[in-house]
Image (cartoon, rainbow, N blue to C red; front, side):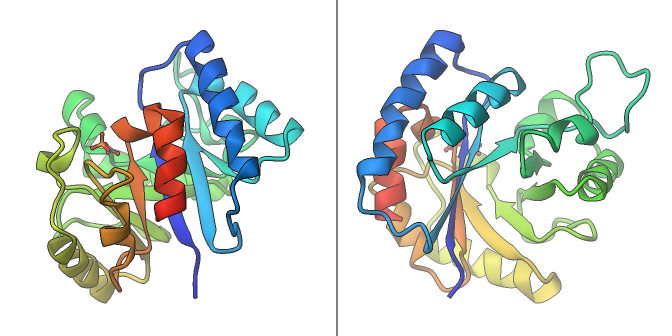
Length: 221
Ligand code: PGA
């Protein structure tokens, strides 16, 4: 059986002080009786926090992985303000690509997303490719897809586990990938998703901002 994947997408929220508190609370993960052979935990903080999260996790022996929330579609060069794959690979093993918030607010097109996936793969950073429906295109080389219906994001109204499972089945029939569900996942509902045959894990936004709640989600998943 493959591991249940739990991705925490902290989005654009916490400052340095809040990050410090978050990490101190999250450290309790080392006291939980978790079988990490069964669970793959991927934390995605802001770029400015990747280094401190990486240092904290390694110095406290916390066996989780890091993901970036975005990546430049370009390689290194004269692209002021961009963070490229060569830079990200030193901190993160994963990167979120195709989130609806980026498609909508930053006009990310399918072409741009394909470029982002290609540069991530070139530098050994695994893309977690987010789609909003079963018909979405999944670029070549992607191994993890996250299905996040826009109406479920941050609304407290998740998709039904049955529908998410059915969508995941369609995505899997077309692509050789693992599929996660995202959208208003909480400690109370996480198991209803991870128990489904076609769902390999979850991606958690709002609820992951409270480290205690994220720990419960990880336990219950
Ligand atoms: P949410 O966000 O858990 O706050 O709904 C999920 C996401 O956007 O990844």
